[in-house]
Length: 345
Image 1 (cartoon, rainbow, N blue to C red):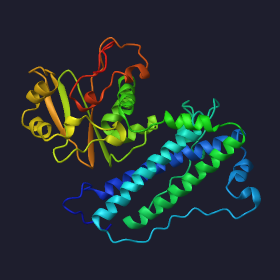
Image 2 (cartoon, rainbow, N blue to C red):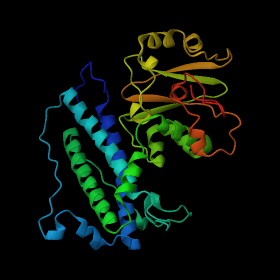
Image 3 (cartoon, rainbow, N blue to C red):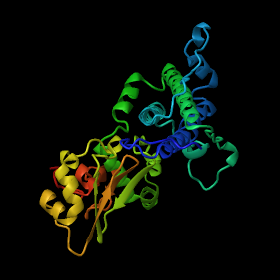
Image 4 (tube, one colour):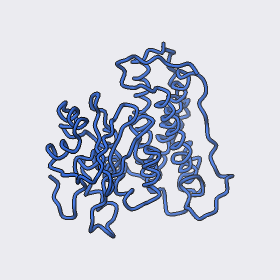
């Protein structure tokens, strides 16, 4: 494959990794979220196939159905232009994931027998698996193909939404509420991620080893965290803290804006030279001398967050309760998670 030249001042260094991440996430949500749920509605009779066909814009009056197209003229592989197109793909993927969640949330109580929406019972017929698709060709051709497929996916979601509303199974109020409570960037996502890791050892293992791929279980849009979301676990022997020594790279698409000090030159310079002292002086947090301090440098391609230790006295708590103990500072490593009953600073 032709290598794309990267300009020295480009934030995105690994174009191929970002594009592969979009391809993998889009294929996952297409084959394991959207299409299985469309088939679910059809198979259970909740939204018959013909109701879907009638919901296609223009079908009710016999007018031709507009074909979804997003043909993009080829461009030279200029780094800043290509970076923007990949960033746009990442943003469009986020909207695709949110739209699936808002439209198909809680499809019903009957077991779904297709891909990841099936109930895990130890038996599964591979016959029902939805075929995977691949994207071939140059980087330019793959970007164009992904844009077309995202258009087609959003078209399917729109038709399903219309059919659900026409049948009374989804209202505009429900849709707006789901969107308002949906998986948008902010500290609450950090809380959900950390809380799930505290109560689910398998999820925690996947989070530490695979990062962003584990977030699919929570239907959290991947955002612009590139090909890698690094997660460093705080333990009784190690305390981790995150910095971006170049500028202010941070998984903000997942966790919202970082605290003001994260972008400040004083923090970026001091935390590298004297991490233990900086943590003590800036955040009033004393890391014991026998505990190792590790500093992780976030970049546009690899963005880091910290998995704080679970507070004592939280046995039996729900994930929602635990998530309330997670703060922006704790997922950077500047503070531990809140203790039960401790107010947010």
